[in-house]
Length: 49
Image (cartoon, rainbow, N blue to C red; front, side, top):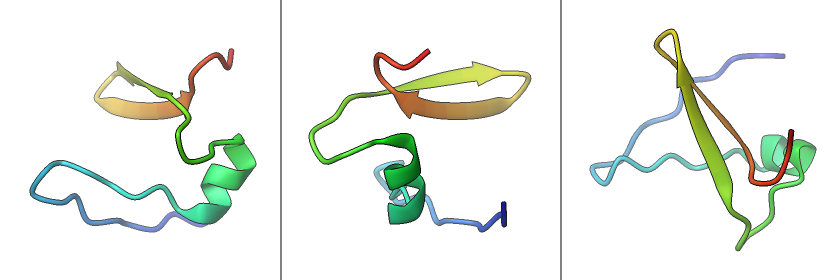
């Protein structure tokens, strides 16, 4: 996977790239979960293992 940097807005928002959202099955209106471990943040669709 190619890593690309994305800008965080003043409201601390980041847009999920369409291809990554599609791969994760994330659609508009879905809930997501953020997890932090060892200084890294991961995001996944809520209800996913």
